[in-house]
Image (cartoon, rainbow, N blue to C red; front, side, top):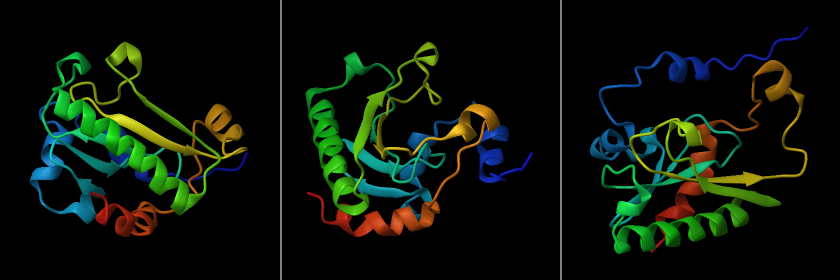
Length: 161
């Protein structure tokens, strides 16, 4: 059997999951490129997923620490939807995907890896982008480095209003 190495996953697997909210800490650091933050809005920010399902997998995250979608203000909810829509458009132009998965995983039972802070996933998809590796080998093969994804998208998101 051949092995595919995915050492970047270990950082996520062994990282402490309690004690601080990554989505609250990231924007405070003011190091957008290192933290993969593509855009800062008034109520939400857009960040590449550090542990993506596919290249270009990003998230729209409320600035406020909140996990209950029903508690979002109308401004937070409206801007979140606007940024999701704009993200889909930018990903279409930049990567040419054939489809998208867009959604929220709310609560542990709903599949949320980070349960304490709401975030909307935007995942570009291509026909045939999934193969036997995730099912048989519990491994995803990523065709692009995160830094390359960030660089490919940064300029488009910089111009986002």
